[in-house]
Image 1 (cartoon, rainbow, N blue to C red):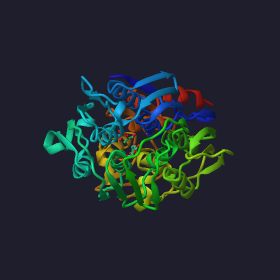
Image 2 (tube, helix red, strand yellow):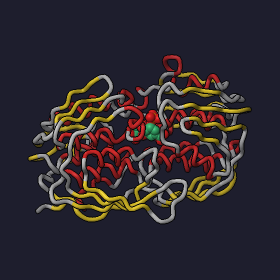
Image 3 (cartoon, protein in one colour):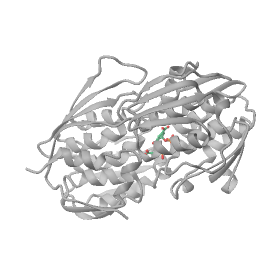
Length: 431
Ligand SMILES: O=C(O)C1=C[C@@H](OP(=O)(O)O)[C@@H](O)[C@H](O)C1
Ligand SMILES: C=C(OP(=O)(O)O)C(=O)O
């Protein structure tokens, strides 16, 4: 396993960083391009392992896709253009690929099998399989369809009115993607607003969707037309450098081109509440997916309480928020975040265990964690457990830990931020 020895103790982070493309939007741009009619171009696509899994799956379904770095062209021929794959669709480490593809495959007239890595094999799929079955899907898998490998025998689908039991953009998106192929209305009601990139994409690809707060409705079937998509930088990737800028001494960084979709900006609200020195400069020309630059510098942070509807708006940022909290004055309480248990790892446990090895005081709870502030962190052997966000959080911790942080399975960062270490080393300056 690849271990990285990080010796960045006391480094200041300074300079500018171009935040790579948004993972959620990159996945969706390929998926929509594949089921639309015509030539879709995608700029600033994230060439992370997860999004490459999405490209590989659609190539296997017969869609012509060309990629040169972060520029991707997808030659879609509508939902009908997808062909029965002659081999397994490998979704790698990507929950988004696995779940959203189920929504697409459920209505297509052929057989396909989806499976990913060891982490994917443990992640719950019935949350998607159950509503899709209600729409008419024939999906089978381990434990009645809870776990991969999942076999899909495409069926004609009908619309559904569905109250989401968990606030999950992946479940909402899978249902909407199935709804685009189904007869009649598909309505999804969310318990709390989750990222709305799928709703935005439907409109960018010439489809129609009605959104009213937590209520989303579309009428099927719809045919989509190719689009030119510009992917903004990923705020979930930016979050690691926002934290680095706030907690490292004598630091100031500019994060360029960060996506600022309000369904994703929970981290900004938390940083403001914590008292971070931060300025947001929105780009002049905004599209469906707003973006801007963010300037952040060393900050005296204070602890916060995080829960409720804010959670889905920062769900992937909780590991790095936990690190921020270790440096804040006072206690931070994170609750209503039981979903963390079913991510790439159980992130409540991995955050608490790995940060504790560095000297943090964290109590894991059933639905979050309680973090004591002003902890003096020190070097130690830590692990990502194959979870990209845990790996990046621990690498950022090395800026303030006294001594070497030896991070094993550091390569996990490839999943969402292949240039992460390059960017970290470029910004970190030893004084
Ligand atoms: O729809 C998406 O692109 C995502 C939704 C979230 O998952 P859930 O829908 O499981 O909450 C998030 O954690 C994941 O990184 C990406
Ligand atoms: C949970 C994540 O992704 P996914 O569900 O797509 O594996 C993530 O990127 O933190």
